[in-house]
Length: 310
Image 1 (spheres, rainbow, N blue to C red):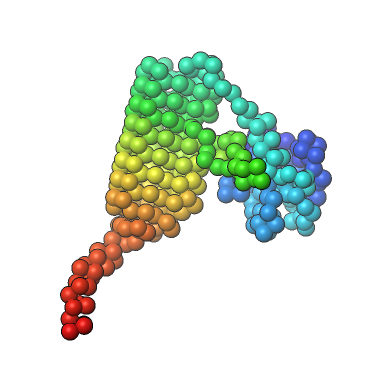
Image 2 (cartoon, rainbow, N blue to C red):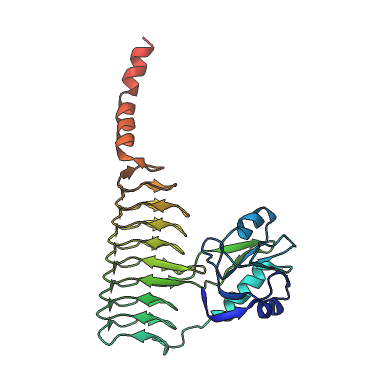
């Protein structure tokens, strides 16, 4: 998530009650969790074994709960509860705004867009030319929808990320500061759900088509011209290339990468990254040609055992 303008880290340190180690002249341009950080971003860490990863990340400002050696050109903000500090910054710059009417006054809807009855459109939503949103959909805050997009009934775009901080009192939700971006010429079936990013963007690439009851998790990046059949589910922070086909009920784990022109057969489970240009099948998914040979060999196993024990 990017700030509307750069913020001095001295002002941030004062608000969260943190001590600064390192450069005090830095200006923060955004805030992101560790998977999404870029130069200029703030991130946080409160588990010592992850300190090194955070300090070596692209983030310019790291909120943490004990002193550490600050890398050159960066700043550390030391406070008691880094997660609470991080969440408070996100809430300040992306405050909660419940919808008080069917279409928020801050939504930007192109005059050629068709919006059917009972569609809820949240704050700071943008909807492009010739887009058609059918009845009973919800388009949540800060969603960006391009041109010539079709969204079928009862779909929800921009629901909060399923992302929680485990504490002694239970699971504490992060404030979802990210967005959903639907590019031009996308079609989304009925009853789909697409989560906004934790702090980055969930993106559905140009020309991609989703069948009914597809779920896309937070911060997922889907490429162009993909086809996802019914009941596909994709875990958070996963990257999917261009021209990928996922058949019905394929499940994709979080934090994996699927290359261009991959085909995954129905009911397969993708638990690790997949190389592009190949077909996959099974649970866990493997190259189809290998899996089919293994299945063929298994059919001969009873005959083999019978002959072996004669």
